[in-house]
Image 1: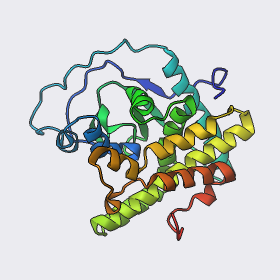
Image 2: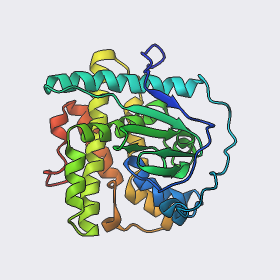
Image 3: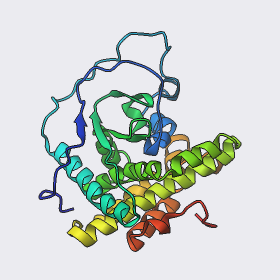
Image 4: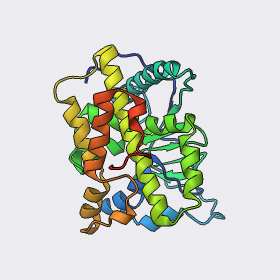
Length: 284
């Protein structure tokens, strides 16, 4: 991926190494899937992540040993990808007759507090609609590469673009409408709607890639394959099979590997947000 010469975003908050208190747990984005599946896969007790700690517990979160926050290469990469999503979605919103509101992207290490609550690193990257921020512990990229077999810079860019897709859903009112509907449905039906939300975010990630390539020629040979491999690696069926040895389709929250690949490809091939309507699609 050709990113080194790209514009850097001013919307990156680097909180790595900062102390954080405890509160309610948070999900969302890829993080919702990682909450239970990757928690078990990485040897983390899911109840700790799902339930957090006693609200009356005022003890600080455990300290995290890590290198000092600074202008390292991965931070630069994240900043460039974020800037590219800003440029792409600003133009697409202009074409819709709307104004794009740029989100913040927060880098953290170990744990973080957001408007959606407290989250540990095992949650994975997530988007919080309450503060319109994307949260990423960069160690997730190591896990994506080493544990899930999805290496490459474009695979990493796809993760960011997926969470930005949730921001787009939030700005367009899609997220609020679907979350309201979920509250009136059974758990199985609510999960089915969540799958459609996540697949739409995958498609919107593909829309970003398509438009960025057309405008700025950011892709190199093999990049699309890297992104598709990442989409496949974090499919519900694949993660469930790895973590618990069996697949439970009714518990899916993000879609199967095949579904994630299909909708990401659709976004890449069309470059059109209107082609990402997963909610009326007869087949996912």
